[in-house]
Length: 140
Image: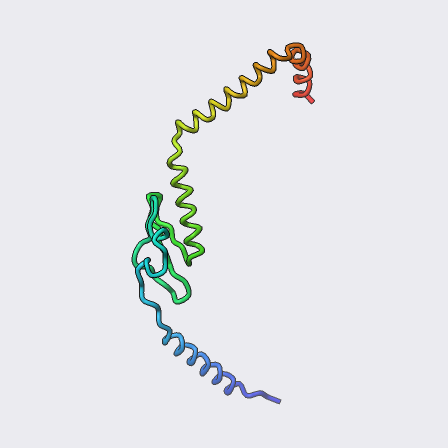
């Protein structure tokens, strides 16, 4: 028993034509200012602002965050929240100077050296006895 292929092919073509006609009728939302979908603190802050206009695909907004670190895109409000936290972290890192980092490292090293000197002064015999054990531990 043979099945007619022509009606099946015709139905497939008709379905494709209907789908393409439906796709043509889809309207893309107009671009809008950032103020329409965001709070003032999300629109601009320390070291960033949202570019206007904000585009939408009908499902979510496409935000562009402009900062001194570059342009970052965000698809939707959740992604925008992540990008804003990242820009805030980069701003904090940029504020921390290299001199600050060096000073903190040196102060930690001095604190450790001071603790060692105090330990030797409080327990000189234990320190001398512990030296061979420490050397043996390095080779085990």
